[in-house]
Length: 86
Image (tube, rainbow, N blue to C red; front, side, top):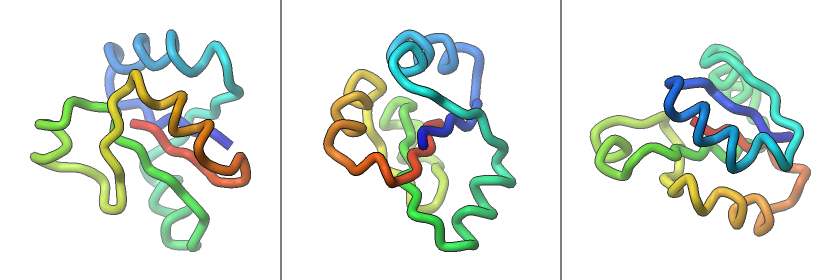
């Protein structure tokens, strides 16, 4: 399942152009992400912001992946995993 934690309108429009057209995406809240982490769900949390923003602050356990490379990330992992993009 692919989930999108909405961060900003700009990110949403770019993200939509790349991923939302090819995949079924569910929007979730930060609280839901925390709950899934606490429950031990198999999450891959992906920060698509610029690396400088990631270095300043990010969700614990997140990986920095440029937005343009997210499709490759999805192809490289099992569809049984939960992806959270922000």
